[in-house]
Image (tube, rainbow, N blue to C red; front, side, top):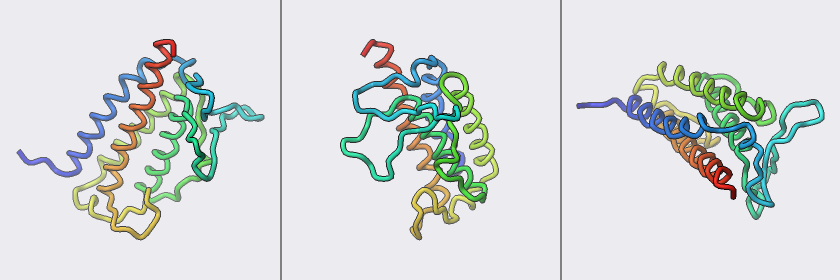
Length: 174
């Protein structure tokens, strides 16, 4: 049986999403802002009511432990920008990606991004996978759309594991 590269990447994405959905379906609103360590990054309500993620232009040392809220914002940020690139739109700046808030708003936002990503995947052909993709590398490398799709799968798997581990630690009373 022969499987196209696009179909293989989509299968891998769906596998990663199913692992992520296991935790998304079980998240409680209070999970999102639980502070897992004394040194952490989260999302905080700004003076005008919106949510603002902690951020530093250079990676701090030590690296802060992110909250589930921060990780869910981070997923929304990189995925929104990747979708912009994949659809030929001007990518949004980090500060333009608004986190909708803890609980169901964040979960629905991530599910909506998944649906938008699936529409992107459905339009791609195997030939499209060989075209150049500047994101997330931002240079003149030889990275292709296939590399970008594989990167999305890896990034989602990593972030799903982080959220899952934080959810389990909080539930265990850590």
